[in-house]
Image (cartoon, rainbow, N blue to C red):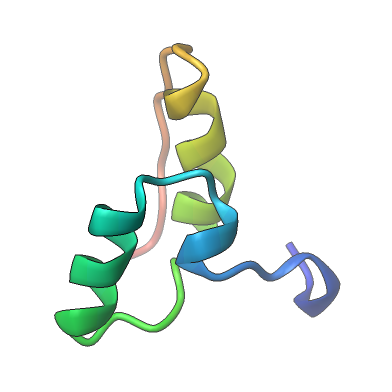
Length: 53
């Protein structure tokens, strides 16, 4: 994922209350795996991911 496709939480289709809470907790941007997985999860698909911690 490159910088051209970088999204913030409000662009991922999340409920606005969730977006507001995540930002309030200090998270400004989703991780690359969150950017990739959240839209699939919200569409009802199962997701299995692996990311470096």
